[in-house]
Image (cartoon, rainbow, N blue to C red; front, side, top):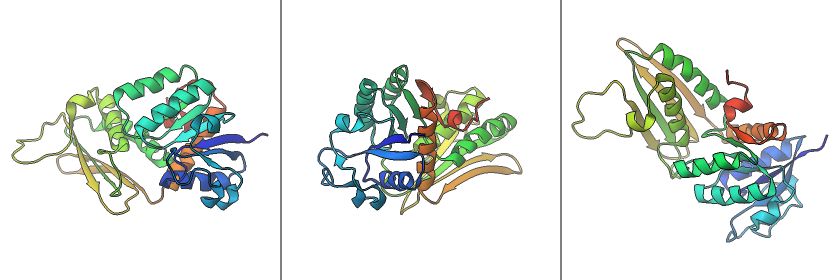
Length: 269
């Protein structure tokens, strides 16, 4: 069986390096292209400098040339870069696994439109465990829909540029959808001063940034006399890379369309 040809955007970044490591350890995947922005000092260097087992692939800033012949692009970069890559993938018929966070409504709509031509897995978090939490929240939110205040607490490393995290927002969206609420109208993104009593219909978010925290997320259901907490803690970015490569395998076997990790993991009803 032929191997799945994977291109990695932002190959020298934190996630890029872990993806390269996971590809090097796999039996059914091969690195097709290691992409970097045109101004990167690594352009023209061998990808083996990042992962010795992948020697022979040159890091390139020419995204279109790098993507020719690829099966799947995995992209954990920035929204503007992801949109540029999306246009090229559409032209070339390359599927995409998108783990980029901070996309606005218009950019998400562009992903949806492109999914008519190519396969796209888009998820705020590629971790298998986090996506199981998404499923658990549907049940918890139905059972605890009355008499429980809902708060989402997330913590990440000091270098993360968006807040709340895409995962925290994804958790909120699952809860709001299950409860028949609009997250844009019921979310509270911080409290300061005299705020008055808590509105029971709101979903609160609290954000922590510091050190090298990979990613912690807790959903708190606070009732009278008890609290229920559903928590996921990531100790390594490898969990996101493993999920992303699982998504790449899924795209190889499925037609054009917009998918998420619930599809990949078979968690949809």
